[in-house]
Length: 396
Length: 141
Image (cartoon, rainbow over all chains, first blue to last red; front, side, top):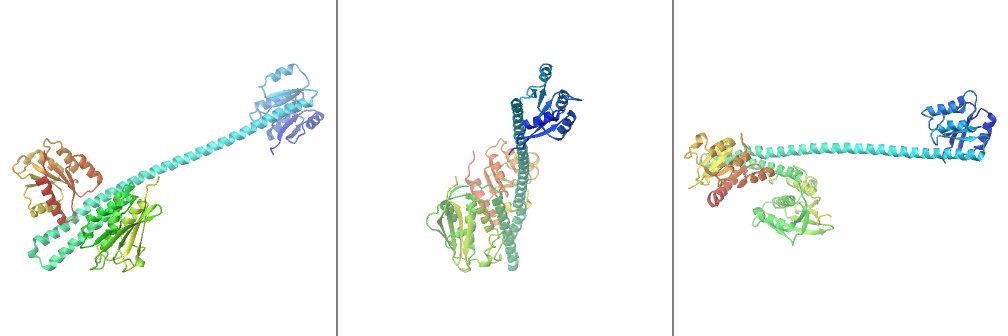
């Protein structure tokens, strides 16, 4: 239910006021009746009125003078006025000085129907104005809200741009770092290895067996450090290199890869593919890296004297393919299952098996970047089965 | 006639290993060394002491490192390709596997890009391959 409209009734004759009040007594109006221009001004200061019904002829300050004051004040300027006037004639001229719609008049003696309908017209006008104002306010607050959201968005965008720039800077630094490792750290390493070897070969007659063994150790240690540096470089490359995804023929990739490693071929090992491997969605370089690390591990982690047998096959899975890589190696103890995919984690001492503890971390990162999954089943002495899973088709 | 080889390399150890590797593999082409990019340019343009072509023969093959003092390897390559002699084989021999370096080197007209091996045995293999491919079988026009 809408709040009632405030009407101000001004007449110096109390009996006229009573008559007006009884005419306009309706639930939609809240009436305020005063008997002087002075009381009217006080009422106007306290309340917002929708309409003033104003007697023209009053002592002290007449209706026109009060109307002038009302129209001069900014707060009340728009309050419409219905004058109650006893005469025709000169008063009409005064009324015409007001803007259209701002005032109206009713002649005395009052025709109740005319007065009621004129009041109703102004009341309706006021209501509509009020609704419009409310709608306007709602719109303005909505606009303000939108501006706020927009500003917040702009701020978020700015922060994103800043963060992106920071990330680019970081990547750039990482690249410079990798470059420096590759170039500057490997050069002295080459020197160590190379001089040890030349010493061993060219001065063989002048160094005893103990000395030769020490030189071998220098060579092995530097070779190992070189492997480590290369693996760290591969890992950082997997982290940051762009990895465009496309359909990759796993069968061709696996067979080509196996053919390139002499250590994976008889008499040193048997690496076989069961059936034909399907195509999967991935990055060829990353897939190559994963396969070479997993098959490499399968061949490497073997008991001495055991012929490494590695078997690869594909198993269809909903929406994808799981590639299994099974070996007959030493297996992985349950307490190590959590560790093996961590960076620099080595379950075995480097004396037992040559490794850097980076291979499986590279596999994990590469699979993550290709939106794939990975896992394994293994027990000590029973070999291991690693699996990689990828989507079969590029999502549309 | 066996063409001379100009090795442009600032790392003393790498220079030593390459000379040693050429010795061990029995490559008999004259091998000369420039220690930085400027020296390589001076050698090729025959400036100063390099004017004596009996002592400093114009090479048929340049083995060029990328990270060099004074003038970097890629700029040496650019200058080499501006020389009037176009049948000069340039092979980058660098420890950088950076894709940008590789792409830029080929864009500037290198004939090959070899990654420095990490041990001496691999270096011997590489030198044998350089000898067989670039010094004996490859033809230039």
